[in-house]
Image 1 (cartoon, rainbow, N blue to C red):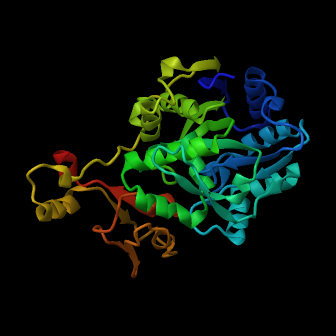
Image 2 (tube, rainbow, N blue to C red):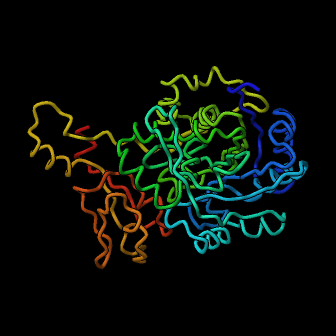
Amino acid sequence: MQENMVVVSRCVDYQDTNIKTAVKNIFDLMGSITSFVSPGNTVVIKPNMLLGKKPEDVVTTHPNVIRYIIKELKKVDCNIVLGDSPGGPFTEGRLKSIYKKTGFYDLAEEENIELNYNTGYTKVSFTDGLLVKSFQICDFIREADLVINMSKLKTHSFMRYTGSVKNLFGTIPGMKKAEYHLRMSEAENFALMLVDLARFISPQLNIMDAVVGMEGAGPSAGDKRKFNYLMASPSCFALDVAGAYLFNVKPTDIPTINQAAQKGLIGNFAELDIQGDRIIPAKNTKIPEIDHSDTRNIKGLPPFLANIVNKLLKPRPVFDEEKCVQCGVCADNCPTEAIELTDYPVVDLNGCIRCYCCQELCSYQAVKIKKPLLGKLFF
């Protein structure tokens, strides 16, 4: 099967008939599920399960898309496990809470499949890594015969876009994610780490829920946007190029795609083998910009002055006191421990690395990214 093949099926909503037809179209073009799965295999369906949000909030992969992938898998005598490691503590109780809120708990009961509650993880070597030579990987992922990577088409305040490659960050256990943000605080290095992780996990089947996605302040606080597609590919990199095209953004302006392209892992959209329906790019999409505003890189500016000016120019997280419930999730998950809980969260901008995990993991949309006007003019 061609690595640059992307199968596309129009799908206007999440109604059973439309999802069933779209999934059938995908496997008619990609080949039977038996091309990917053998009897006796343990298959992990890895959705985007970022937060405990309802399906209509478009933060997570819609359960009805997963349902019809499960129905395909049931044609093979395999063991099906649905699971992810969302941000925050990786505990059985928290997993159960998120499964229930996302609709995955009811889905698993209705389809009689297993939900993952194994919170173990193991350090594994990856000598072929371009940047990262080892990863902490969830055991339920590591022990699977096949991982089906089921992403959601969304924007991302740090990476601009979260699709198939970024979805695999959920194979790293909960709080361990903060260590990767801390070690690779620059967007380019973080993206290359994600590329290495995708190469290590190497999912053979990647499916993107692009029926209704998110634009603007993604991946959890953005605006709903209808795209009306399901897409699939044997390559998470090729699928992301198609997703970027659907978002109407130059693929190499997405850090993960740019890094993959530089390493020869993927070409441009013209080199993809698009099967099925034509992709019609959305118009006037709202895509976050990557923050490159660092005065410390400007020649001739003394370091002490650069640090002062930098704080005035760089984007920063700002907390909405009316929405904030003082739950402490932002402080608990800050990689640099730069957030202090007083009456409301306060950010030490000297320690903030602008990963925006605080915004990503806030269930109440209480964190906004403020870009100072002076910074916009300067850069």
